[in-house]
Image 1: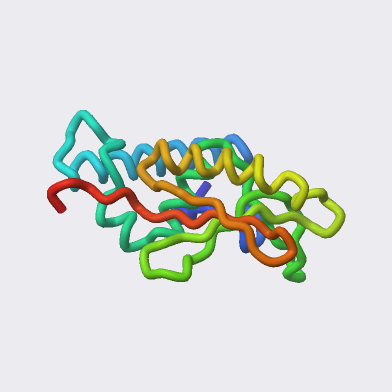
Image 2: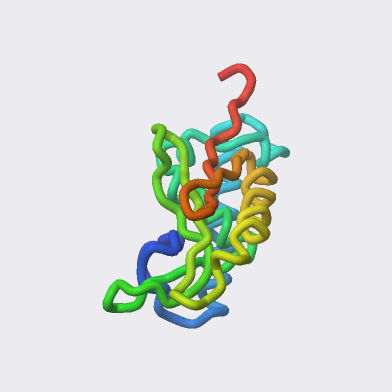
Length: 155
């Protein structure tokens, strides 16, 4: 892969290129995020001590990277802007610094029937990475997560 790494939010066309190259780039990006945590949080041996300021300033990118690194599939749009893959979709939350995670798929994909289970998998991955997430249910039984970075002591 060439160029700048971009985490997949699930709200665009899938990244071009080889799947194994993408997996390698995701691993490197996640290792970079953990290194940022080690350096910025002052915990050289505990990178999961909580999100660093970089993540707090770019929550959509951080959460998308965490989900992709956890092996959770992203949703995607085709060239015409139609949903073409089932998976997570990360967007800014209603409150500053929060993120909304939805489980979306093309019409007839059955994504809605798997929302709760899939979002719980996302919530576990986010929680493990210091981003607690709560599940909400709205109109038409639509479910989503709202995640925000763990508050660190002494900050």
